[in-house]
Figure 1: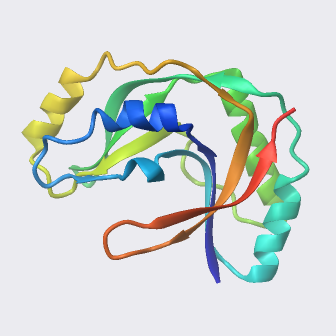
Figure 2: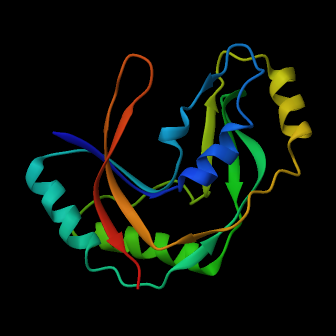
Length: 178
Protein backbone atom coordinates (compact mmCIF):
# COMPACT_ATOMS: atom_id res chain seq x y z
CA UNK A 1 0.00 0.00 0.00
CA UNK A 2 1.13 3.50 -0.79
CA UNK A 3 -0.38 6.81 0.38
CA UNK A 4 -0.77 9.27 -2.51
CA UNK A 5 -1.83 12.82 -3.28
CA UNK A 6 -1.71 15.11 -6.31
CA UNK A 7 -0.31 18.60 -5.76
CA UNK A 8 1.53 21.59 -7.10
CA UNK A 9 5.10 21.53 -5.85
CA UNK A 10 6.29 25.03 -4.98
CA UNK A 11 9.59 26.50 -6.18
CA UNK A 12 12.31 27.11 -3.57
CA UNK A 13 11.91 30.91 -3.80
CA UNK A 14 8.22 30.68 -2.86
CA UNK A 15 8.86 28.15 -0.08
CA UNK A 16 11.46 30.55 1.38
CA UNK A 17 9.00 33.44 1.16
CA UNK A 18 6.33 31.41 2.97
CA UNK A 19 8.76 30.17 5.63
CA UNK A 20 9.29 33.76 6.76
CA UNK A 21 5.74 33.69 8.13
CA UNK A 22 6.41 30.66 10.36
CA UNK A 23 6.98 30.91 14.09
CA UNK A 24 5.84 32.84 17.10
CA UNK A 25 2.85 30.74 18.16
CA UNK A 26 3.42 28.33 21.03
CA UNK A 27 1.75 24.96 20.45
CA UNK A 28 1.70 25.32 16.64
CA UNK A 29 3.43 22.56 14.67
CA UNK A 30 4.96 24.42 11.72
CA UNK A 31 5.20 22.57 8.42
CA UNK A 32 8.81 22.32 7.20
CA UNK A 33 9.31 24.45 4.05
CA UNK A 34 10.31 21.32 2.08
CA UNK A 35 6.73 20.04 2.67
CA UNK A 36 4.91 23.14 1.37
CA UNK A 37 2.60 22.26 -1.53
CA UNK A 38 -0.87 23.02 -2.87
CA UNK A 39 -3.00 19.87 -2.86
CA UNK A 40 -5.13 19.31 -5.95
CA UNK A 41 -6.50 15.95 -4.73
CA UNK A 42 -5.78 13.71 -1.75
CA UNK A 43 -6.02 10.07 -2.80
CA UNK A 44 -5.01 8.13 0.32
CA UNK A 45 -3.81 4.54 0.67
CA UNK A 46 -3.91 2.48 -2.52
CA UNK A 47 -2.51 -0.83 -3.75
CA UNK A 48 0.44 -0.79 -6.17
CA UNK A 49 -1.70 -1.68 -9.17
CA UNK A 50 -4.06 1.20 -8.35
CA UNK A 51 -1.09 3.59 -8.09
CA UNK A 52 -0.15 2.55 -11.64
CA UNK A 53 -3.72 3.33 -12.78
CA UNK A 54 -3.53 6.73 -11.07
CA UNK A 55 -0.27 7.50 -12.88
CA UNK A 56 -1.74 6.44 -16.21
CA UNK A 57 -4.89 8.55 -15.67
CA UNK A 58 -2.93 11.65 -14.65
CA UNK A 59 -0.59 11.32 -17.63
CA UNK A 60 -3.54 11.93 -19.98
CA UNK A 61 -4.27 15.41 -18.58
CA UNK A 62 -3.62 18.25 -21.01
CA UNK A 63 -3.80 21.88 -19.94
CA UNK A 64 -1.65 24.99 -20.32
CA UNK A 65 0.87 26.41 -17.85
CA UNK A 66 -0.45 29.27 -15.71
CA UNK A 67 0.54 31.73 -13.00
CA UNK A 68 -0.20 30.94 -9.35
CA UNK A 69 -0.54 33.72 -6.79
CA UNK A 70 -0.62 33.10 -3.05
CA UNK A 71 -2.25 35.74 -0.87
CA UNK A 72 -3.81 36.12 2.55
CA UNK A 73 -3.83 33.77 5.52
CA UNK A 74 -6.64 31.91 7.19
CA UNK A 75 -7.61 28.96 9.34
CA UNK A 76 -9.56 25.74 9.09
CA UNK A 77 -11.81 24.85 12.01
CA UNK A 78 -13.12 21.49 13.09
CA UNK A 79 -15.62 21.13 15.92
CA UNK A 80 -15.02 24.74 16.98
CA UNK A 81 -11.25 24.29 17.26
CA UNK A 82 -8.76 25.85 14.85
CA UNK A 83 -6.77 22.95 13.39
CA UNK A 84 -4.67 24.53 10.66
CA UNK A 85 -3.19 27.84 9.58
CA UNK A 86 -2.79 28.39 5.83
CA UNK A 87 -1.89 30.78 3.03
CA UNK A 88 -4.55 30.99 0.36
CA UNK A 89 -4.20 30.78 -3.40
CA UNK A 90 -5.94 33.31 -5.59
CA UNK A 91 -8.69 31.49 -7.42
CA UNK A 92 -8.07 31.37 -11.13
CA UNK A 93 -9.86 29.66 -13.95
CA UNK A 94 -6.64 27.83 -14.88
CA UNK A 95 -6.12 26.43 -11.35
CA UNK A 96 -9.77 25.35 -11.06
CA UNK A 97 -9.58 23.80 -14.54
CA UNK A 98 -6.49 21.74 -13.63
CA UNK A 99 -8.04 20.58 -10.36
CA UNK A 100 -11.26 19.57 -12.15
CA UNK A 101 -9.27 17.60 -14.76
CA UNK A 102 -7.40 15.76 -11.98
CA UNK A 103 -10.68 14.96 -10.20
CA UNK A 104 -12.33 13.73 -13.41
CA UNK A 105 -9.33 11.56 -14.36
CA UNK A 106 -9.32 9.90 -10.93
CA UNK A 107 -13.07 9.29 -10.92
CA UNK A 108 -12.80 7.67 -14.37
CA UNK A 109 -10.57 4.95 -12.91
CA UNK A 110 -13.06 4.31 -10.10
CA UNK A 111 -11.86 6.47 -7.21
CA UNK A 112 -14.60 7.94 -5.05
CA UNK A 113 -15.34 11.63 -5.71
CA UNK A 114 -13.73 14.16 -3.38
CA UNK A 115 -16.37 15.21 -0.86
CA UNK A 116 -14.82 18.50 0.19
CA UNK A 117 -15.04 21.61 -1.96
CA UNK A 118 -11.69 22.61 -3.47
CA UNK A 119 -10.14 25.32 -1.28
CA UNK A 120 -6.69 26.03 -2.73
CA UNK A 121 -4.18 26.71 0.03
CA UNK A 122 -0.73 25.91 1.41
CA UNK A 123 -0.75 24.67 5.00
CA UNK A 124 1.71 26.54 7.24
CA UNK A 125 0.98 24.90 10.60
CA UNK A 126 -1.16 22.40 12.49
CA UNK A 127 -2.64 24.38 15.32
CA UNK A 128 -4.91 22.16 17.43
CA UNK A 129 -2.73 22.87 20.51
CA UNK A 130 -2.18 26.60 19.88
CA UNK A 131 -4.07 29.34 21.77
CA UNK A 132 -6.99 30.61 19.68
CA UNK A 133 -6.28 34.29 20.44
CA UNK A 134 -2.70 33.91 19.13
CA UNK A 135 -4.01 32.39 15.88
CA UNK A 136 -6.53 35.20 15.44
CA UNK A 137 -3.75 37.75 16.02
CA UNK A 138 -1.54 35.98 13.46
CA UNK A 139 -4.29 36.03 10.81
CA UNK A 140 -4.97 39.71 11.45
CA UNK A 141 -1.26 40.61 11.34
CA UNK A 142 -0.67 38.76 8.05
CA UNK A 143 -3.98 39.32 6.26
CA UNK A 144 -2.31 41.44 3.56
CA UNK A 145 0.38 38.84 2.82
CA UNK A 146 0.99 38.41 -0.90
CA UNK A 147 3.75 36.40 -2.59
CA UNK A 148 5.02 37.17 -6.09
CA UNK A 149 3.23 34.99 -8.69
CA UNK A 150 5.01 31.84 -9.87
CA UNK A 151 4.63 29.98 -13.16
CA UNK A 152 3.08 26.51 -12.82
CA UNK A 153 4.47 24.27 -15.55
CA UNK A 154 3.73 20.86 -14.03
CA UNK A 155 1.82 19.06 -11.31
CA UNK A 156 3.09 16.15 -9.24
CA UNK A 157 1.95 12.80 -7.86
CA UNK A 158 3.42 12.52 -4.36
CA UNK A 159 3.70 9.59 -2.00
CA UNK A 160 3.51 10.29 1.71
CA UNK A 161 4.98 8.35 4.62
CA UNK A 162 3.83 9.38 8.06
CA UNK A 163 6.78 10.03 10.37
CA UNK A 164 7.27 10.78 14.06
CA UNK A 165 7.69 14.52 13.57
CA UNK A 166 6.46 15.31 10.05
CA UNK A 167 5.35 13.26 7.06
CA UNK A 168 7.89 12.62 4.32
CA UNK A 169 6.62 13.60 0.87
CA UNK A 170 8.29 12.03 -2.15
CA UNK A 171 7.59 13.35 -5.66
CA UNK A 172 6.87 10.17 -7.63
CA UNK A 173 5.89 11.55 -11.07
CA UNK A 174 5.80 15.06 -12.56
CA UNK A 175 3.27 15.80 -15.30
CA UNK A 176 4.20 18.66 -17.62
CA UNK A 177 1.64 21.25 -18.63
CA UNK A 178 1.86 22.30 -22.28
